Image (cartoon, rainbow, N blue to C red; front, side, top):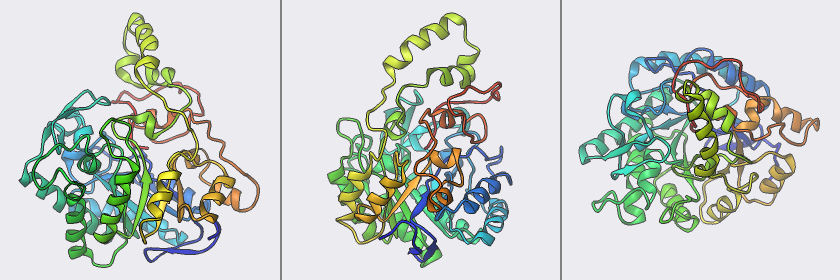
Length: 407
């Protein structure tokens, strides 16, 4: 395999093996419809030579809206707004894949108007909220909501969808033996914990037939009792059997800086971009500045940290495997692809700072991303549209909820 070759992924034609990973753009309006400016982000990526674009997540239920500016595709009235985006991208011939998600236990009541919902009762470190256990009826409604989201994505002109089952959001909560402690048919064995994804796939196929459906999973979780790569391999096999067309491998659950690696906790950015802390007294700020680096963990291994898990999964399945996580250098991309450790690589932060990085690499003008891993982009996006801060604090920040978000 070669990096800059034409390929087909689930029937979609890609001009290379580099994909823009799902990245929350912070461009959902108050009613959940995506703002038209979102198309400009995708146009820049398409002009910049990326093989395919996976969008930031769109919620399939209002109860699963993780942030106030997260788009929703929970009703048919949203379809025209999404159609305007796909129409703008079609001329470029770059596949546009809509990521579908439910925030589950990671949502905040002030955003959804109700308590967080999860497979099992659990208090979340990232939000400080305690989730309510889902009923059978609610699980059935969620399965239908995902399937209808897939159907709406197809009607809106997206080339495919990705079901988000990673990073501690609802579907990864079902997969996680740490977060899913149910004793009914939705918990216990690996097969039971993967049941919800199988049912989403089955119901979606009834509605859309042969339509590209990717799935994103964790290859590893940090917590004791969480999913490890051995079980992730089995999960990937079950998802292949469930008719998913490709699997993307990430990591982490309710532990933000395990998923998005940074060399140090960006204390200044958190103090400035979280409105509650920005308005706090100087004493509280000093206390926070002292304690944040001591209570928030960072992890070693800033580059290629999911590749070993992806390699093991690829050896066990026949569907394409996509890997992301600290991929910054063309040499690393070549090593992953040419050695067959994964079929595709995806990147998040490199595209925020340089939407045209793929074309630069293809033309031999650049060997690695300019991204410095400061993490400011993902801390700022709940309050403002996605941008690169390059380690510099903004002069002003909008007054809306802020905090770490989906990478």
